Image (cartoon, rainbow, N blue to C red; front, top):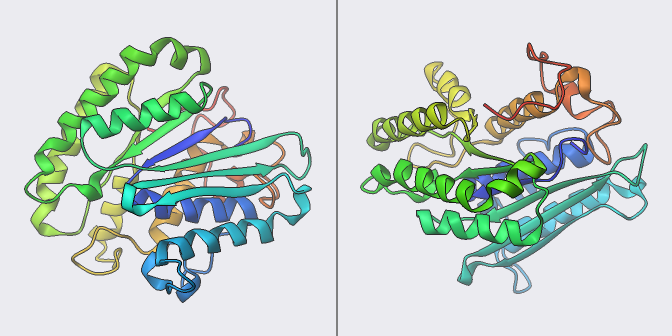
Length: 295
């Protein structure tokens, strides 16, 4: 991951939970136990508000503590920093992990909460580019924010925002090798599934024709689980997933951006033999440089 470059996850609460699950793996070399109850990193509602802090503050504070505990050997240069004010829709985080074998090299992973709408997506990209110009991936997803009567706007908003971003920051993207990536999505909820399928088809069609929007395909993983009648979400009315699903998505992401043969010195403070080592079989293009974008 240090070789890959800075990565930003921007999106909804589902994106938040993937981010928190992922950074625990990078810091510790393993995923959190999936049934940690009040210590869960994939369900804010498992936490209890206390001392003036709400459940989301408790979630982030616990995640920060986990990173600190698992990165003690990195010489104090690792940590999770976050800024949150839910009344203002503000939720930003930055993970810095120094590699154990070379503390001068670091992994940078960011998260930014994002509401729905083309203008919201644009504002997040604008904010990201004001922070740094060397992004490797800007991974976007906002599906959880679209109610069943508003789903038809997802593709239009995503395509408009991506087109604007490439027109506005094209030179910066080209210089840094930056890719905007759409993380595909679906839901087991029958009332919205068909509509969401159509929106994903339109986004995939645009991605194929434009050549400037790789797709991080978590959707295939979800549908495979649903086809086997696995319970994947908290309940049948939510789009929030159980932890094992976030683990599968992160393994998929690691296997794409850090192919098994390219792992090098390790993903982060505690990942040991390399980020790709726990990601499953190496893809066909393992060993190529630079690593391909999510697709």
